[in-house]
Amino acid sequence: MADQHNEGLLEAWYFDGEGGGRRIAWDEVQAQEAMDEGFVWLHFRCLPKQPQDWLREHSGIDRIILEGMLDDESRPRCSLFNDSAFLVLRAVNLQRNSLPEDLLGLHLWVEARRIITLQHEPISAIGDYVDALSRAKKPRTQGEMVADLSLRLVDRLDTVISALMDEADELEDSVETSESRDLLPKLAILRRVSIKLRRHIAPQREALNHFSTEDDPWLGPKDRTRIRDAADRVARFTEELDSIRERASLIRDQMVDRRAEQMNKSMLVLAVVTVVFAPLTFVSGLFGMNVGGIPGVDDPESFWLISFLLVAFALSLSWLFRRLRWI
Image 1 (tube, rainbow, N blue to C red):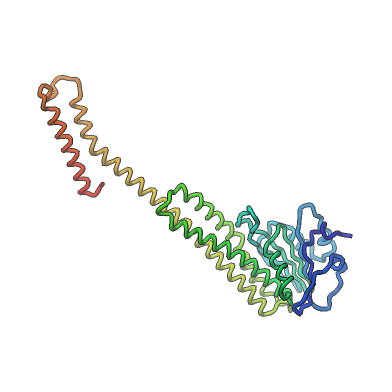
Image 2 (tube, rainbow, N blue to C red; image 1 turned 90 degrees about the vertical axis):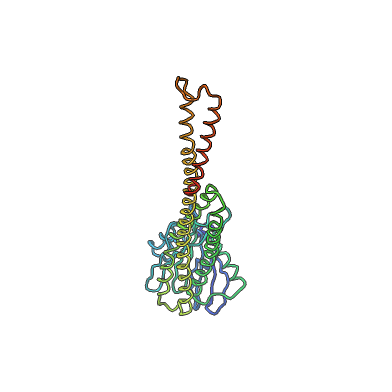
């Protein structure tokens, strides 16, 4: 007999369709007793060394669909069948020391009397949902449960996207006062996170909208509206991630322009100094040659006269450059 822990079963619930429900034991799951009303929710965690014999041999899920559920790299998508649906969603990774762009996969198999969900890593939205089931009203239909889970996943995405927007605001405010070497690493991380998040969550909108077109009785009008609302919020997140990426590019352009302007100012100062001192160096070099015929060699006042002329020439050039607004 298969063991619950070896199969990776984390949660097993029965909902009566009237707002009530209870946890069920592994023996009841294996018995697969038909329920007159309501539906069953089974939540598994897939680990590499677990055989998943019950899912493969006794769940009744098509082999191709099951392989898709066991694949941790699946992109968000939805496949509809006669009386069932396969839905893949992405959840933000809120574990300690984890990166927000490393999204986790949640796979859902929904049919007339059963929902089977599968995760590869712990998903905080599932844990919060189980806590809510222990305290609050239970879902009455499969559509209501899928809508609840979708909105919980979207709420956590909202937290991450808002944090990225705040970080972009801080970078924009500090671009004029901070050094480029301090901002560039933060800017690179911001762009990387926004690009990876967008690539993973953009297909989630199409998956939710496709699921909302299911015409089975367990998906009511209110559930469709809530699922489409989750899809619209995902679309808004995608637009915000696009704006974050564009703002990151603009911030980088501002830093490049600022650095180029600083370089231009430095080069202008060097050019002015060169123009001022080049003729002075030339004249002083001529008078410093150890050859005969240099004027003023025998006149003790020649040194001070030449020095005065050179200083006057330098001051004249400086005044001219200021008049031309070169310095």
